[in-house]
Length: 117
Image (cartoon, rainbow, N blue to C red):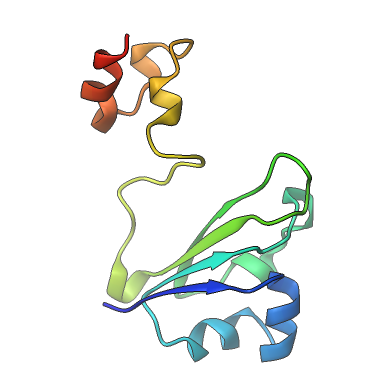
């Protein structure tokens, strides 16, 4: 399995340089591609930047300033399969927040959550 991490400094710009998202993903010859600094807002995300027949995509967006930074992960279904879970934010941070009930905490974090309840 090949995993690539790539700071693209703007997903629209790099897709335009390669022709489109499909050509970008294929050129990296990877099973999982982690993109940093996609520089998109949620309302700017369209199918040309996230959908491809062979890939699943997961995006996280900055809350402030909007359209700054952001990360995305593309997972090739045929070779990497599907993630068991995808969570926006630092894994476990939400579960360790005392204002979140134990029933809403991700099950794989229950031992951590119970230590801080």
